[in-house]
Length: 190
Image (cartoon, rainbow, N blue to C red):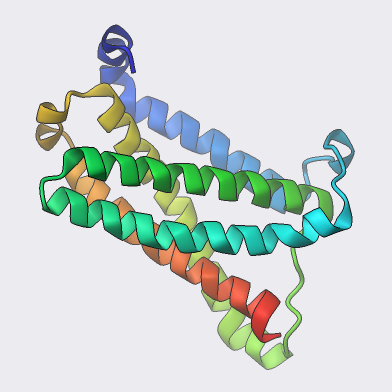
């Protein structure tokens, strides 16, 4: 980010984070609840829509590598490597989210194909915790990214970036992990 713009945005990072997070979460819930008219979106062929969950599972698996990789990198003092891995994690999440929102908007959420007992005792709690963590993680990740984008590297330890980043990375990782469990129950096990 250009230094002048970064300096101007620095005092507004929290507000920007909350605003961007609210917009992102509104899009997610609007898509998941069917409030986005599918007629407004281009219609992909069925094989493309069918591939989205599998592509998203691969994106999530990659994020399960980049997130802890970024944590290890910063613990070892490798700031540039940390930045690269966390930006890669954010890009993987953005791609995942775009594909997920498109598929849900066009085709609706995937119904659970397994037995009712598993649905209530395993699938719903896993899905619920996954969604809750994703909702909580979005503003934390956005805040950590905006702090990193608007402050010089040597000033980041004096911001909330290290503390928020640790929490965000942990929750983000668990959310992706539970997302893989949801995928497995929807598309592999049943």
